[in-house]
Image (tube, one colour):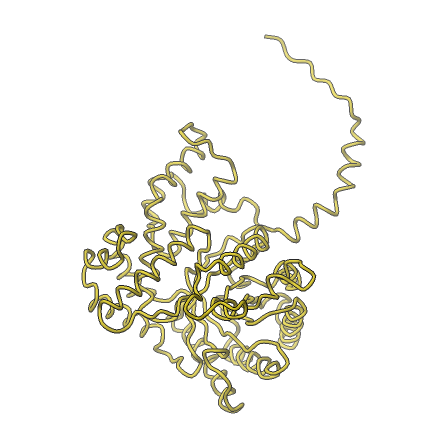
Amino acid sequence: MGQERVATTLAGAVSKEIGACLASVDAELERRYPGDPGTRQPVHTVYVPADAFTAGTLRSWGDRALAALDEHAPDAASFAAALGPDGGSAEDVYDRVRAKLEREPVEDLRVDFEDGYGDRPDAEEDEAAARAARLIAEAYGDGTAAPYMGIRMKCLEAAVRDRGIRTLDIFLTGLMEAGGLPDGLVLTLPKVTYPEQVTAMVRLLEAFEGARGLEPGRIGFEIQIETSQSVLAADGTAAVARMIQAAEGRVTGLHYGTFDYSAGLGVSAAHQAGDHPVADHAKAVMQVAAAGTGVRVCDGSTNVLPVGPTEKVHAAWRLHHGLTRRALVRAYYQGWDMHPGHLPTRYAAVFAFYREGFEQTAARLARYAARAGGDVMDEPATARALAGHLLRGLDCGALDAAEVAGATGLTRAGLEDFAAPRRHGRTDSAR
């Protein structure tokens, strides 16, 4: 068979001209849409009022969650029955849930100086901020910290702006005096309404970094989306998209505030929940605005607590388990937990989600990596999703490294290559 004759019409200068024409667009795409940072995303964020936070808080949450299991679901069968029809896989994950509660009950903790703390005398909040810094620094020093820890300050609205700035300053200064900022540091800015408030937070952090000789951009933060104006601005645009850009690369997450947002839209208290249509709309806008930017979206919480007699605990567990599972299907891989009793169902839903799809996900990725055929034709984007699914399962403890390697033939490094083929130098410390 002879070699095909290859002919072209366009001169090489045309390609160079097109490249020059699109150079600014190439740079803009790289800057605005760097892709997922490839770092661990916690499955939840736990909020603890600043006055209630102690050195034993993390262990206490784990112990209280285990006690709830002991009392209301002492074995896999009773736990599966408590979760109802959607909890059928609980038997597969029960032991993992207990092990998680013993080993790492909380993945992300925020010491709360906002709604969960309220207005206090300045001296009292000053002391609480200094204590939070000391306890978090000690936890990272002795190895008892959660993977991520930090504070939720008061917002930058006029009435509480100075108090929020002072609390943040005391907290960050305390960490620096104790040896420096930990890699797992996370800050949350609540009740953001205008992109200019995000810009103000950036200037605030720049000032602290400059005063302390830190690398510019060292301190990142999350934006809490709990006002209607943060989703839809007065001019009809998606304000949340402008907020991400206003953060100048510092924003790491968008956290949905279930109750403030719902109340702001007039939803009655009995119907304020993560599966209400207004919540679905807000999170969908957040998700689209954040796509490709490296910013993660976090679901909100339920205020129905698993306390009281077993019947009430089981009802609250079913609700929380269902909401968590619903969020995972919609690609919201993180949510809030407001009570230790929520931890068993958080991990049950998360572990079941990753284990149920493990065999098929691993097989598809293995076929793709080997360039083998199958009954599903996967593309590079799907391979990224498959690898990302397995990595999230590994990070939270739903999957084991040995079983993933055995099923895919890939090491963690191999999974990361598929999940994030382009690297942009972002690390956990940028969270």
